[in-house]
Image (tube, rainbow, N blue to C red; front, side):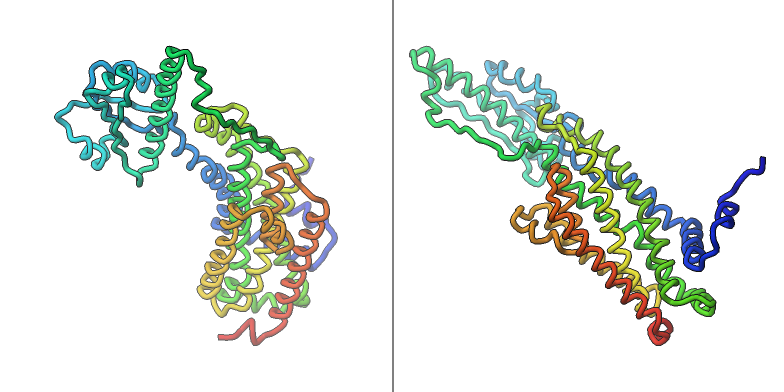
Length: 410
């Protein structure tokens, strides 16, 4: 039996100028290593790393702070033993001859705890014993270590207070007369809240980057290589040229979104275990996104990518040279990225107004999908505004391609 190749299958399809242009663009993309890296390797590597590198650095289990203890009170062994039993700290006792401040400033330890000589005596006499911590606020691990030490101090102190009150026949609740009961209107775990900030941003960013390099190359790149001139002499309309190039970029964007989702699945599987190490609460580390919301993330990630590609096609068609197109692309990438960062922190009242904006609206939809929240009316309007924007951009691209003054200006 004769083995079929891609070219055999393609040649059996109905002859179409538009399909031939799309096929030509895809072949060019397959030959371009930069495009393949941006389409496949970038999302499958960048998304998991972007999600998990901060979590790894924040996790005291994977990256425990180093604590030096200067124990001047030999009777405070119980407190020192409690600190040594905390798995999120690497505890080392130091001698009184060493300078605690120098040990921290020279990064020998992330922080140093000094237990004064009269610490135990003050507590046993009913007084207050003060611990001294030397740390570096510019060091994230140092700040994390301070929080862990303070939590241990608070636990130890509460036990002493509770014992003192019971010895006097007093209910320990007297020291905390005001309670607080909170009722959450939306069940969102800590892992989900953090992912709602990070996932839409990185997927949106990678989606724009994916087809961006090829959109630049297929317009400004071909102008500079003089291959566009030969292409324009063929008996094909400018509309078909633009649509063929756009569809080629569209198919690449689809591939990129698929690898975006694969990268997100890999990243989230690691992310939940790291988040548990930070929060120490199994329920708070759960992250579950329903099938419908995963579908919405995929669709609107593709819309972000396609909209960004359409913008770049217009700008790069107008550019005189490939270098000028790259300058425009860098500026646009910054213009797209800065508001995306803001979306991570904007209040819901402001995000509702961004849903109808191209590029940023789909980012908001993806954020809501991570929280398993979706409003059909907002989805339809967001989709409609994005489609209208793409249509306008393609119209502008056709107008630019139809002008020889623009295409061949120097």
